[in-house]
Length: 259
Image (cartoon, rainbow, N blue to C red; front, side, top):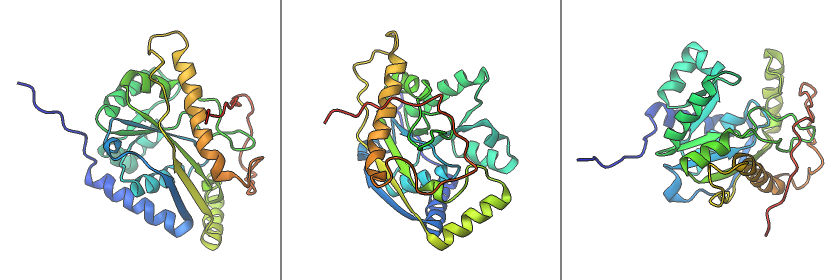
């Protein structure tokens, strides 16, 4: 006889880390969270798709998710899992390792699809910290779309703005110390917005080009959510980080959502 399926429960360690993230962000910045995640989705199945602009983003997103009652499992670069203490903590918390540029990426997608079936999973569709010269979302990798099409989980776009004023792109010890000192003094506003779910039901997973079209819709939805967060900085950020490189090879052609 089959036993009832139970949603994944975040371990105590991860719940404590989410609270710690909220405290860290409150110390360094003023967090403003708007939008919401339907209560019935918060424990999964759910995919949260966020833009990635700074190394401080995971802490910001953890704090924002706690404010909305979501404890997502992050898809994170394999390098973090190789760190002795951090890696063990991330494995215990249920996060998903992604070794980019290796054959193991396909295994990560399988693990993420399993995770998304009974929990919330947070992903960065761009696949890296974006290098667009104006900090708008880049053209995405198709992994998030393939995950969504395979799992059937709803995709909620999450836009964030302001974390680039806390830490620099290049996290050398001196640069991080200067960034934290400046943030403690200025306490910049960081805004996070949870947008409406991305419509993907009309894209059969096995249809040609479905993953690419779904990816573009996800990036468009993140951009839609980001526009009002940076209404007074549409052309580029006021805070310029000289350590951030620029790459225009992955510029995304934004198509605003029909109203």
